[in-house]
Length: 158
Image (cartoon, rainbow, N blue to C red):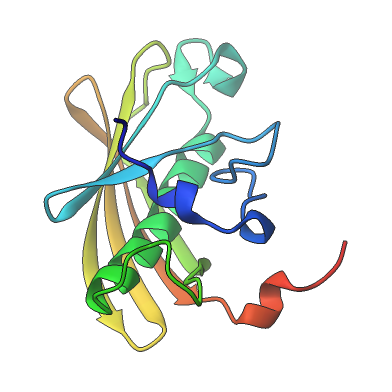
């Protein structure tokens, strides 16, 4: 049996994000899981994620850090509340602040690994720190301040 990703627990009306929404046919479909106290996501860039030949586009790196962090924030909030991720009301987090430091060029033809740590949980705010690694090298570091989205955020019609 395969363990479900954090993003698999998002209700349908909260599953359309370009980065992590399972219902966005053109999206990245990132998947995040707990590995002890760290959240982990693996992503293999496609050729169209190129910045320049051989290297990953920085916007993709920022998107991966962003969506992995908001998923981690939701999972951390469920953990802190001692709740399972499939219980109601759903906890969904959105980005209030995103900071990315690009440390070195990220190679294209390798599996990227993101490792997130919860730096702070306070009320409706969760701060996540993420390292993005390729071939054993840390290529980028990010920090996301995520805030719990109000229920009304997801009841708007198209």
